[in-house]
Length: 322
Ligand code: DP6
Image (cartoon, rainbow, N blue to C red; front, side, top):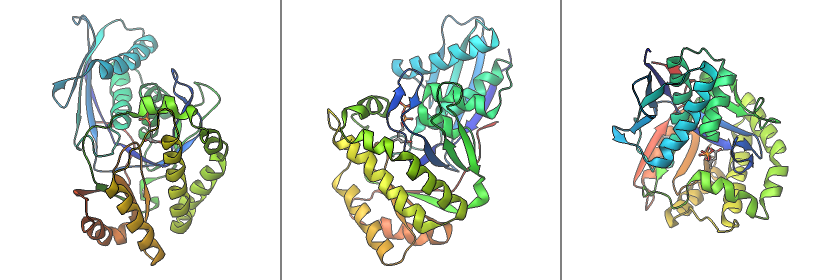
């Protein structure tokens, strides 16, 4: 069978996914909205080979850990079922961005895997079906299949829980300036954290209010209204971390420098700069600003104590075959 290679970008959520209605199917408790990150990418090559005794996976040229291989096997199993194949696959995946910097590599990895593996199996899936398939590997991966600004509708079940593009990459020149304050591996990964969301007494309120935040965020993107975007993005990030900090066990991802960056961003916005922050399951701070301000923002972040590096990503396109 012919090998296939696909490339996908990670994404940054403006309205976050945290907690599932169904952990096995990765059906989220609430919808989410993200921006696809250009320049950063996972490249994945898949070949189904009848001589293999089991699925094989390498990440950045190293054999993958058992949990990573298990997640990949689940997706490959779905692809085999759809294509009527019995062969195992050899998968090679490489990221061009550093791990542990607060950029979820599972999103770009499973989006690239969905596209490469279906293609290698001789299937030609719609974008919606690829997004659904990627969701089974990692929830946020469904948002790395379409490009630009993307919304994952929670849906009512497996069939209608997938992501769509709500605006193309050139709709709005936003930049994600990532202030790196720590690169050590996180103690609790997103999958485990997602399962703890329901133990926080605040999760129900966060989920109940999500449709309102999604609407404000969607409208802010469509109207390119930075002020409205900034307010809702920071509120959503604060709600996510309030849930994390009040879960059992409690999850604290911040470092002192994380809070220092958040405070500097709030201060700069009060002084009139278009800038806002958002954080995922890690200490690094994603600082959003229009392209015109990106150099000034990068300088501001570099000058803060505890900031080791600043990475920059503009708005990226959909997953594609190489
Ligand atoms: C905080 O998609 O990484 O980044 O489905 O278990 O792989 P799994 O979780 P994952 O969770 C992402 C959580 C987040 C918010 C977001 O990206 O929406």
